[in-house]
Length: 195
Image (cartoon, rainbow, N blue to C red):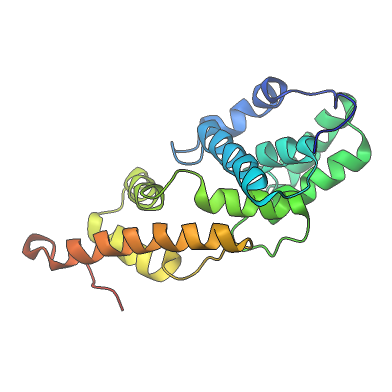
């Protein structure tokens, strides 16, 4: 599971290079998010005994929040290449980062681990917390956040690994129950009940 040779960069190097990319993100999408996703992916690998490349997983996790911007992907590729990271590792890490996005269909082991780790990053209540905090950071009202949950999150995402999917379904059920409870509160009558 580990690479025999050092890759040329550490998590600290990656954080230093990408600090400005994550500094302006809300608390659910900053560098702490990347660390949570990486830890969740490593945990999934251990639990499922998935064979993967740790270097690809590490770099892919840090690139997770920046690859969708072409200019930053190119800058990251350049940074990694000039840091001595092998071209094959860079390519695999960029692929895994793209695959980690929740709408992606991952093919690589690292992409699967990062994709599922992204969905499971913080435990049972985290999906609910992430939805509430992200919505609040964007200035949305509670009814708007609940409506966003119903339209864009509930029932939309699936983990690739069966064990991860069971855990994600538990997170989603928990969040759904809370939003349904909020909808029953007479003071929040504009929170739409579950469909």
